[in-house]
Image (cartoon, rainbow, N blue to C red; front, side):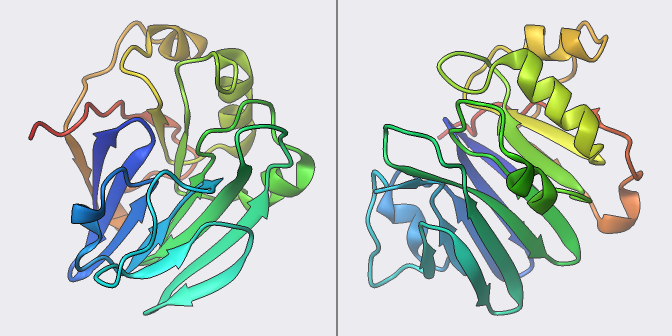
Length: 192
């Protein structure tokens, strides 16, 4: 499994020939994607004929063996926001996208037992850093990947860390993940 950070909240999850895009910012990347997931509706980009299965609101979906469940974050303003649970290549991903407040219990239940948690890690105008760290500690994922910023010093400090190595991508296999390790992997946007 390869996770590549493209900036903002745009992630590319890839395993073999299957690719899931989360909050993509351009249609060029749609070609060959298995699923395209948007955490805000309406999204800044729109479906294209070349793209994969398009998801932009709550519900249960399946695209070529990838199972996706979305639950409304019930936040006002800025479009309908959705949190997702993605089961892809036996790895469970939790995605909070552009969340600005601590999620309700139904969202937290959706994200239980996730292996990799993608959540805002830079604070305002998104989920406050303290709330993001509290949620991560409650969910106890194997890996935490912060998004929506480039400076995660305050987020790391919430976990008693001074810094963590930033990478362009995170490559792993399910067997490499330690349950409840809460290892933080800040990613930097891929250079064009």
